[in-house]
Image (tube, rainbow, N blue to C red):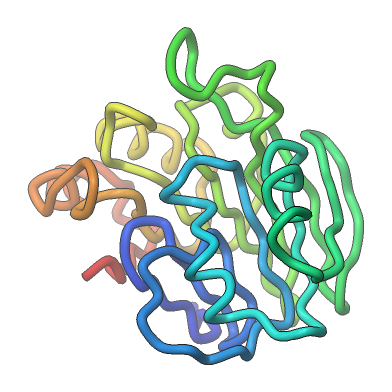
Length: 206
C-alpha cells in the first residue's frame, strides 16, 4: 500500500501530506505551512511551542485536548479546536475522531483526558496513538496506517506494540516514540521481528 507522504522529524513528530502536523517537536526550519496541527497532549515532547510556531501561520487550526489548549491560548492567536476522548469532527476537510491515550497506573493517567487521533485523509485512515499503553480502546480501532509508540517507559514497549499491531491488523504500521528520549534502534528491530508478516512495516524515525 502506498502511503501519502508521511514523514517523522523525530520521536513522535509527524507530518502527513506535507501540511498536516501531529505533535511537532525539534523542528528546525521555519516553514509556516501547516493547515492543521493536531496535539495529543501537553507534555513537552508533544507540545513544543517553538516547533508549533515554526510550522504554523495565521490560518493554521490547532486541534488539541484541554491541557494543551490552556497553554496554547496564552501563547498563540490561532483558532483552537478543543477535543476530549471519544469525539468526532471535521477540520479543513479532514474527518477525525479521538480515543483515550493513557498508561495503566503511571505517567499518562486516563483521567487527564489525553488523546490519540484517527484521521481520514484522501480516503486513507491514519491512526496516531499518542502516548499510550496497549489498551482495549486501541485494539478496537480499524485503520489503514497505524503510527504506534514502541519506546517503553512512557508508552507501550516493542513487544506490547507488536501485539497491538497484530490485533488491529492495519495495512501499514509505522513505529514512533523511540531513538530520541527513550527507546532505541534495538526496540525497532524487536518490533519489526514480531509484527505479522502480512503487515507492511515502514521505518521513518531517523
